[in-house]
Length: 559
Image 1: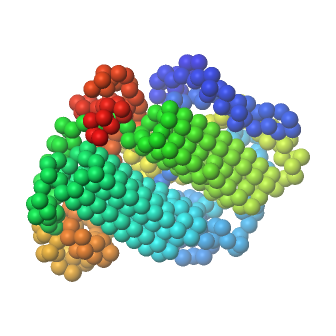
Image 2: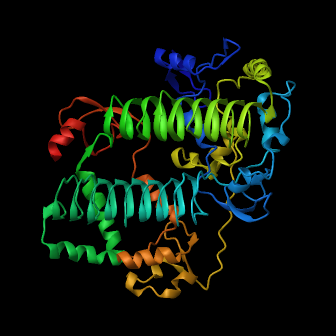
Image 3: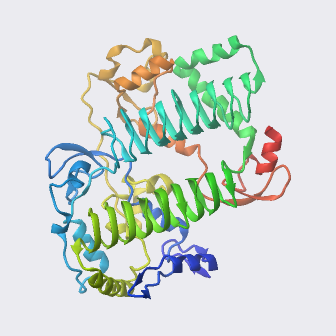
């Protein structure tokens, strides 16, 4: 079946397998299936719409309306919503059903849901479980300690400025990684120790500026090495030559020089078509231990899935961003996990047979609910009997069909966040004019006001970490890329001194975007292998100049 996206006008295909999935996830009430129709948006526009609900990094100070304490929040203070901190939202100090109301059939679903959103308190930051001294982390799982500005992460300790990390310790400036320790400026690296400025590496130690290296130690400026020790720019070296280069990482000018050298080497070296490991019949990138997953990215332990991003342990699911974990039959969700047969929902845990729900936990058979927990058979935060529920929900679905809302994720206009506050701006960047033209919202960001003793331009910083004084903690640095001021926190300065690394010259947000720019887009192309010439699926566009090998040719060339 061919369709035209109602948002971008691109053509897209709906296969018989897709139709079978939509039929499988369609709910049944009183023995009658309420069919979920095929989507009206293409996969990219559906992904963009889900991302417009996910504000990870744009944080504010806001007062919790229950405990009255000033907290870190994804909601700006002036937004017209009620917000509670996590402890209050999931505590016993209020009743989410007190905000319930009957569904008003004189209004469309969007209007009904928007009114409910403005009455029910929502969670200021998305954290699950117990995290210690982690006030500034968001979309974070349980078990982290002493972390600052880490996102989409969990079970880590003493980590800063990172996204997509798990079970890591004493790390900083990471994008995608697990089981790392004492690492800095990494992208997609796992089980590494004292590794710096590297990408797509595993089990590497005491090294820097590596690309696509495995099980290497004491290496510098190398690409596509396996089980090597004491290598300098892909050639054997003495321990003294290696140490000479590593010792100069305390100088910012040397780091910049090596960034340029490394970029040149990466352009000329062989690249893998994808970074997938143990991925059978899968397309996408950063897929691990998965089977039959199409157009998926940053996915682990998935099977029979399509269009998943940043998810783990999912089966038989479509269109999911974030979370997952032992979930199945999910469709069009953001940050939903430990769930089955759930669709069109956002930031909800342990949900079964739920639709159009926000910020909810341990619920079953619920429809259009916000911030409820341990409930069953609720509609718009109102309790019903099983019999009442199974009669009323089909009536609401029929009403939603009339306005075209049934079968679609929560509309972008309902999102409490502006486009440029969310990760949609990272994956689908738009100018302010483009955002307004598409009738999305844009937020004018206020300049940061930092109370410091001194403001110093990045180019005026001492070149070496050894020359940085202790009162640097009272200074602010003007970012060399954006001009935005930023501060160095004590734990950060201690880390640079401990690891003999020069102070960064860029704002943490700019460093994050620098790492994102080094990753391929979430698009799958077909192009021939540059060695065997056979067609392959890859995230390298056909017009890119890198030398790209299929998996078998790459392994043959490296091993």
